[in-house]
Length: 385
Image (cartoon, rainbow, N blue to C red; front, side):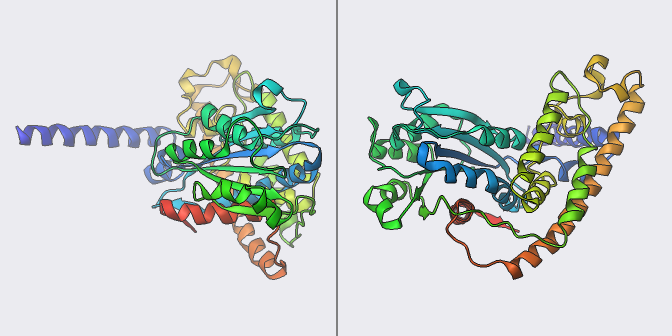
């Protein structure tokens, strides 16, 4: 009987491997490349819920979040769990804005957990500030209730809540919300926008320590300094080439491509260096567009060419045979991988240059978040390459 079970198991394993190999051959990419470039085979996630106070005094905080998103994403792209690179999902909430529903605690889920970096950028740029009541405990509890945190013990699950009013306000006690966070294996990190000691006296530090998170104080009005490098122009030229490798499909393809271009423009509105950082994010495994780009969709098993109706294809692929479409998409994939590799190589030189130019600046949102993430990731055996 044991021999029979072993034989069945062996046959099943051979069939699975053969199926994956056949699929990779079908798409004209090697077996090794298929698994290397396939993000879905990594089962680990870094899940970050960002809870931002959007009351009147928080314009500087929102500005930092907009300008430093790509720094944070790029830093997380270097994370590894074992020999795999974890996926990233970000959720976004705003609270403390009197335009929001008072019965719901002046809290709004702007975006549930998403790996669509363009959508995250788009929603960040949509935030505006206005006066209101700031209920930290309720904001935390709302994110715990509404978001799908999952049950994978290897996932890194983090809340970052930023604001400047006492942590004790509102009908939900932050201590009860923290207890619920511990049950879900979620770590709460608090970012007080103001004086460090004032944040302690208004319980922001206690709000972090209850889940062994980090307490940080930042100057939310400090302007983000982006350091230019000699490699920026070349990286931005590669971004234009990279954008041409996207092959839209489906009903939202053209709209999503327009959002991609809009977020390129939003990044550029801060500085050339910030646009460079976004380009670097687009060259990483964290930038996924399987819902509208045929290259990503096929590579990530979202669709098969055989199942895509002709009216869902872009104009340049209408009337083409299945073989012609596959060749076109495979060529775009290879072109994209080449461009992404060039961007990463230039970025390595850029990072070395900036390291020599950069002065210490530990009082911004990006530094606060990346430092906390790295420290807490060690508990889950995450490393940085």
